[in-house]
Image 1 (cartoon, rainbow, N blue to C red):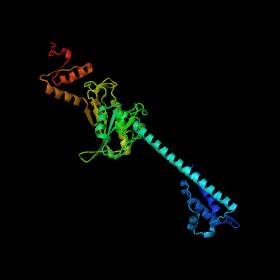
Image 2: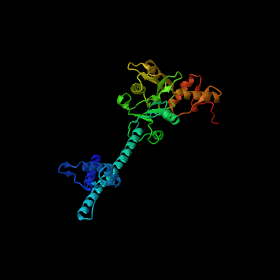
Image 3: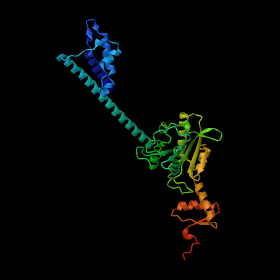
Image 4: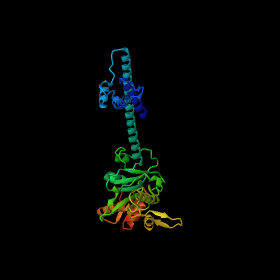
Length: 370
């Protein structure tokens, strides 16, 4: 459309220029070169000014081409000259209408395309399919599963320095509120979305481009890429002994994520990029092999060299409980009131190893109803 309009405006301008010349284009010896040159230059000079319904003087164009003053036609008050002038005004009106409406159409199209691109970018940011920008120096990638309270707190505290990988069952659905908040209403990529059971699929990660700016500097002046995995159950954070089977992120998915991110680091950064693999989870969580052998999560990671650091999520909770007991209790006995049997058994077993006795409120002999 733009090319057709340009040609049409040139055509109107060339015809207008031919009517302004005192000599015809065609002569017995062929085409008059001066007329042809004036027609082409006059048409070109009036292309852009036609967008605002303007016209450059014919005498000025002829003077720039060093043509004689009598080259242009001098109009009289005769009916024939009046008819020619009406044709000239018609050509000027035609090229102005075409150029003006083309300009308006292009401006509207630019606005629509910009709005469309902005909306598509916002959708990609909120759905977790837009690669983050590279202006952040030092960034930790945190694989979280569907939910992660620790990651939400970390993103709130450290902002763009923590980049979460969340499981999204429907990438087109509305994201959690903290994503809307951290992404500044969908304008800044802040997380990566992974569909369930796709942690080991290369195409789920191929659009994620890692930046050298993400690497962390160590005390020995080396640079590493820090990758973390939160395997704790967000809805069962008080289960201190036996991890919930409904973990948002399984051990297998965490290992697959490490491998896929290592592959992306080799593609985006360097194949020799050093990784720091950190897992936050319950070291008491047990698994069973195909032969029936029982093993702990810590043993699985350690024996297969699948991590570098394991952070036990029960340790901070238990440490706070012990510090409170040492401060508030005068003996080695504590009453724990809870409607949950797993919570009671878990805390009882852990404290028993540290010479603490945990009793239920109904059987606490120190309590006297009177």
